[in-house]
Image (cartoon, rainbow, N blue to C red; front, side, top):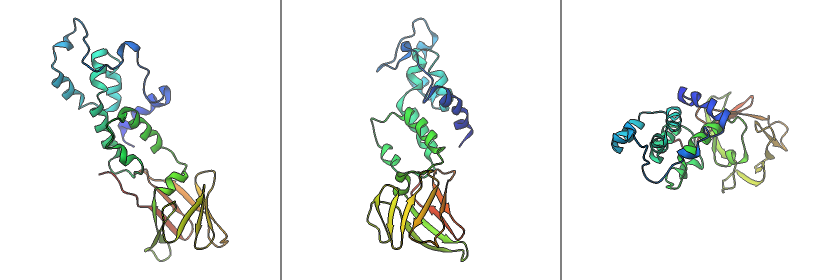
Length: 218
């Protein structure tokens, strides 16, 4: 998480997704007038150009100044760019299709993605949307791959929440969201799940390292 994202956390923790906005500053479809204000003399192109250099925290602050600043600081293309920058190099699942949505609320999505990126408990959706490779700690090299999910795959098939049919035994994600067990095989240790800095997941036990190989946004 970048220093800019860290600065946003007090806003998120205190106000939710964004600071509350006065009704008089709500966004309109056209440029609002501020009356006898020097900002009215600045061309739209110049205001928009200046806003492109601001980070998410500064845009939120500018949006509270006046109606005109609110209009420019909440432009969709500004927050879409911030989302792209925030997600660069991050592991993504469903978020990919949102990149091409014209109706997406990019400002809201930006904050939601940061909050979700801090989550440490895995869900069934996280497992199903990820291909896992694994390496042997003893041999020290790549040994194979697997997938926890509903899609057809040669060695793993999901047949219920948190329960997975495999060649031997049953995979199950425990309620703590951090542990996977393989039922029916007493010699197979539990897997401990951890969140990576790129928002991906990794899991390991005494003998094997598992890591997700889902695509990242470049």
